[in-house]
Length: 281
Ligand code: NI
Image (cartoon, rainbow, N blue to C red):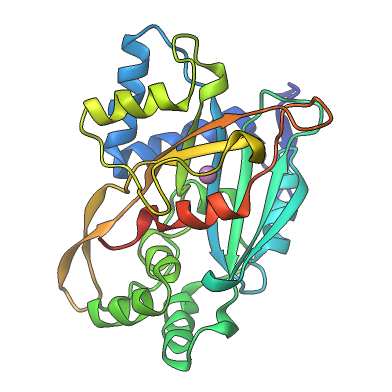
């Protein structure tokens, strides 16, 4: 049957991936490991709000075929183009921002990669072992929650997470969306991010306080806040079971830039603090 709509694109394997189906699949996986996100969504909906997603974020290792270059190719199959890039030297990360040209309703995508060669030898050896199962190239199914790695042992996880919280998280959670983001600009009954934070605090959701609950200022054109990641049980390769950080929910309010356009990019200083929402507490 011929399938045509403006959200559909054919990928290299000839399969059709619909952008809405992609986001629905990711969201369904995300709430399995992030029940707080569904609770917070319910809270907004009970106030008559329709929640619009500002962006989702993904993480990867800079392994050829699974790196940011591959992510760019893959995201192009569902209409996305990179429009900005960022570096996070103290976390050994680089990232790109993606949007769908001429479709401001499509959520943006923030995709980061770990520069593995900047970690110590032990951490690199563990990443090598954990990723030894990877075959072919990064796919959209990987991003919707298929766990692609060799599980680390609990000891390897500790060493890896001590070297890089980001690497520890990625080794246990895979490529699934790391967070979804409530667009505060689209809420009708909340004047600003402060009102949203007050609601979250009064409902006892734990917020990331790195550098303060509010990340950024109106002068940066982007103010953000995030929860602390939920915790889920993980059975490591050695049979040890531990609670590990899963995913978190983010909140973003955007402001007009000097040209009068609503700012669409990201602010490295904010993102640097938000990465820590998945740190082991
Ligand atoms: Ni974000």
